[in-house]
Amino acid sequence: MKILISFFTFLAVLLCSHTGYAHALWIESSSYGTLNQSHEVKVYYGEFATNERDQVDKWYSDVKDFSLMLHAPGKEPVKLQLTNKGDHFSGSFQPTTAGTYFLSIVKAAKDLGGKTKYEFSSLVPVVVGKSATLDYKAVKSPLQIELLGAANAKKGQSVQAKITSFGKVVPQAKVSVFSATGWGKEFVADENGILTFDAIWSGPYVLEASTFAETAGEHEGKAYASAWQGSTTFITIK
Image (cartoon, rainbow, N blue to C red; front, side, top):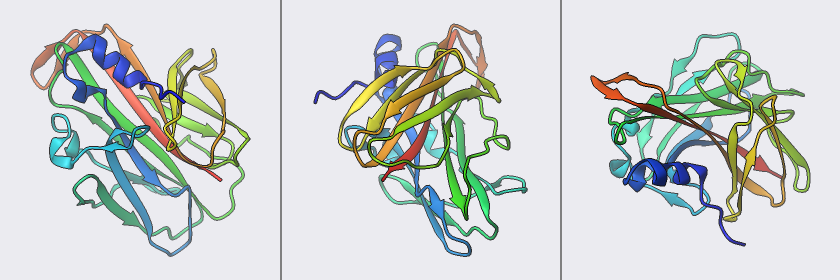
């Protein structure tokens, strides 16, 4: 099946001549953790669908200087310590209470792409103990993808997600869904920011949402005329 070109790539081709801007930043982690056991986390930059995982020293601008925050139930977020593994960063945390933990990144690249400001983000839930639904109220990013229902699903089931910005829905948001098989498809969320897709294959998926606005401002002492945001989440289909 023909691989869908990422919406990130589409925007980058239109906006600038540097293909590096097309890449996404994503967190990989098991959707479920175990009390008092180390839980591994990895962060990649590249193109998930085509298994392009850039070497850290090739990441665009200063994206590699991101902070990975852990939001534990009822606690203030803390920064996780990470190790450069060549083509990704690796870290871990040990959950000590049951509940839903969130791993989040929000990183605006220091350098502009022409006159465009680029902001990369990622948000992944980790459920510890029994939990029927995911509660995203504790996390409000500039752009985020919220999984509705369980943190994972079974092959053949429908998966729903909601796109929000600082807690408010983003209507008609464009979202690309990618499977590790190389399959991909672009969706448009409804007026409530919700999209639905069928989990055709088992294994990991990455969802990518993006927005682009002709909004002027200043970033790192440089004027920009437009702003792009890209956000991802990671889910494993059983």
